[in-house]
Image (cartoon, rainbow, N blue to C red; front, top):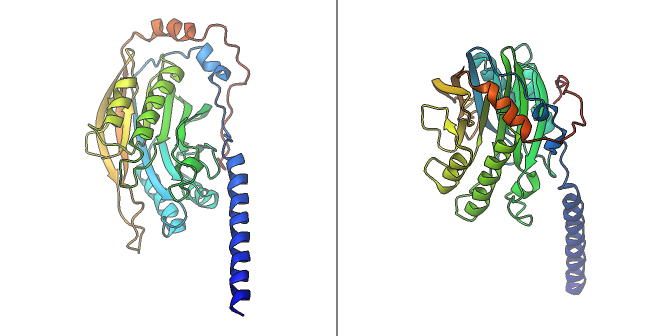
Length: 334
C-alpha cells in the first residue's frame, strides 16, 4: 500500500514538472514579443523635424506606479477606480503609468477617467505579462515607439517577474496646441531589498539615456517620467542623469519615482509645483498604491534657438526612409 502511494506521488510530481516545463517553454517563446514599433527608422518625425514651440507652455505631468499586479496588488478594482478619480481631480495634461499589468483593471482605470481631458491613451505591450507602461494624454498621441532593455533580470526567478515583463521605455510623441512634445515613460528593474540587480539597473539606465538621445526630436521639448528604482545620488541614478544630461523637474523628495526634462539648448524648464498623490481608497484603509504618485506643474519656455536644431536633428537620420503614416488617434481601449 505504501509503495502505491509513493508511486502515485512520484507520478504526480513528474506530471507537475512536465507541465511546468511546458508552461515555461511556451511563455519563453512569447516573451520576446513587443507590440509597439521599436525601429526608429520608421519615425517620420525624426526625418522631418517638427517646428519648435513658439510660446511658453505650462504642463501638469504625472508619474504613478499603480501596483496593478496579482497577489501583491490588493483591492485592485477599487484602487483603479480611486486612482482614476484622483487623476480627474488633478486634471493633468500627460500621465505616465507604471505597473498597469492586468487588462481588465486597466480598462477599469480608463473607464474611471471618462469625462476627463485624458481622452488619449497608449499601452505598450511587451514580454509575456506586459511591461505595465501606460501613457494617458489630454492631447493626440501622434507617434509611439518602445525600446526594450537588453538586460532584464533572471528568467528562472519568476517570482521577481522583471524578465517576464519585458521592461523598457515607452515613447509617445504628443501634439500639444503649441506644438509637439516627446514623452518617455519607464520602469526599471526592482531591487527586491538587495544589491543583486544593481548592475542590471545601471545597464538599463545607460540604455535609457542612449535611447533618449537617439530618439528625441531636439526641436521640441522632451520629458521623462517613471519608477527608476534608484534614488538621487546612487550610481544608477547618476548614470542616467549624466548620460542624458537630464534636469530634475520636481521640488520634493520622491525617492525612486522621477520626472525629468531632457537636454536641450532650445528650451528652459521651470518647476512651478510638485504634489504627491497619496491617500486611501474612499471608505477603506487600502492606499491607492504602494508608491506615491507625483505631479509636477512645469513651464517650458523656448529660448529661440530651436531653428538651427532642426537641421541638426535631420542630419542624424540622413538616408532613412519613413515607412509608416503619421500616427492616428489612439483608441480608448489602449
